[in-house]
Image (cartoon, rainbow, N blue to C red; front, top):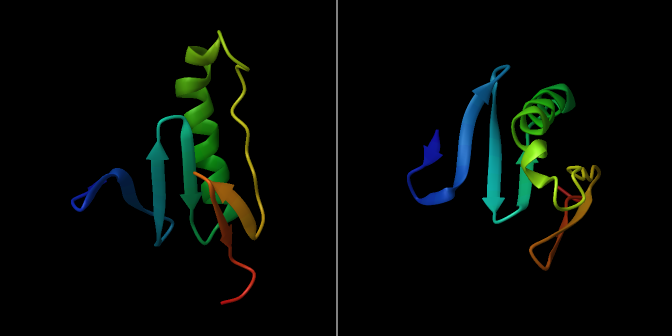
Length: 80
């Protein structure tokens, strides 16, 4: 469901917790308590959208961990 405050953010209840997906052009940030839920949505995104990138690398890159570069920002989740 699209977030009413930001059309680039979608929220969905999955496995009893909120999944948040942020989109910006060809970048995407996915967060959820369960890595299995994230795996499930990545698999779906690859199935639906990787074929449209045949003129580019053709493969969606996935970054996991506590520190990420996203839209020129460093997102550091190493401390609560």
